Length: 299
Image (cartoon, rainbow, N blue to C red):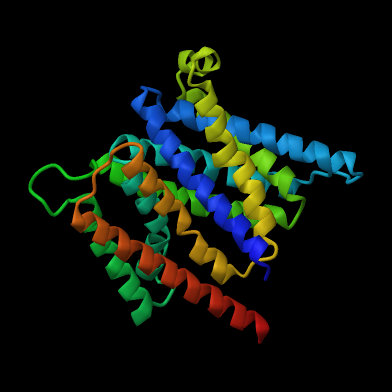
């Protein structure tokens, strides 16, 4: 494992955190979440096409097959859901709360697996689920009689953003076994943009190109879907899954700091405690799962 590889993964997570902050900034400027999601996917597609072009100039042949396209389309559905639900969650609360909710979503995959009988619960996993539940209660403020830190739509959207990301990872993993990464991501971003297109206001799509905010949209696409994915994929090739799980915490932390320092989002002590519980539980469970997978593979 190289330090430079971990640094690349960390830099990718940092960029995703900044993308959430930029999304919050654009929402404050009256841009729709769907418009931001569409342009994020479109700019990501342009970056992947450029990556493919560079590979082509270096003499690498690009081939497509049915399984590559099929699983890439599944990943594209995850892209569309993750981008749109994340920005909707931000618009209904704050970037700090939305980013933490998205990070906690994998825990609910465990919960569904327990209920359906697909996976056997263990004391450690049940404790992690309980901690995340407690963290969400503290983070969203739903225990208070007055309005909480986020609406019900924002809460559900934040969790759906995380589940959509899990769908993207699922599709990306299987598609990557049948072709090069840039091809997978290009198809995924193209599919994501096509899914989002009919949900987006055409007037806003065109308005972006002549708006002073176009620079922020370009940055959103580069940090949220272009350069970040290149850094993440390149770094992940030479990193242990355990280390990657830990540095992934950089994303919600960066988004939170952006909200506090730039957007003046205030957090109560109870919300900070909720964030700590969620980040600790999810990261700890991810590390344990990565170690278990490694040990199983070594047998």
